[in-house]
Length: 94
Image 1 (tube, helix red, strand yellow):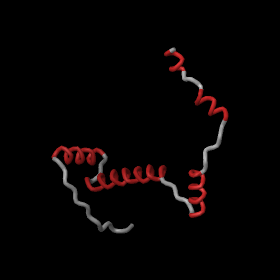
Image 2 (tube, one colour):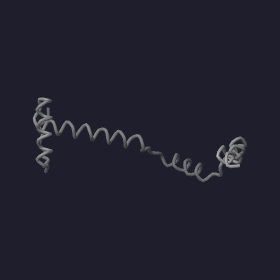
Image 3 (cartoon, one colour):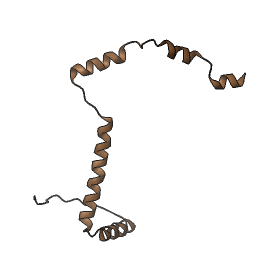
Image 4 (cartoon, helix red, strand yellow):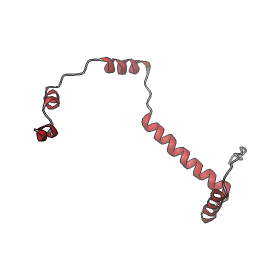
C-alpha cells in the first residue's frame, strides 16, 4: 500500500469539530480517516452525477447531432390536431 503523502488543512467551527470528532469516534476511526472517507464518498457521488449529464461525441457524431437540431421539425398530424384543440380549461371558461 502506498504511503499517504499529501496534507489537507481545514478550518472549522467548534460545533463542526465536536460533531466530526463524535461521529469519527462512533465509527471507530480517526478524525482524519473519517473526514477522508466521507469527502471521498461525496466526491464519487458528484462525479457520478456529472457523468449522468455529460456525453461526448466524435466529430462525425457531432455533425449529425447539429444537423438533426437544425433540421425542420417532422410534421405529425395527430400532434398538430392535439395542439390546436381547445384545452379543458378553455372549454370550462365558455
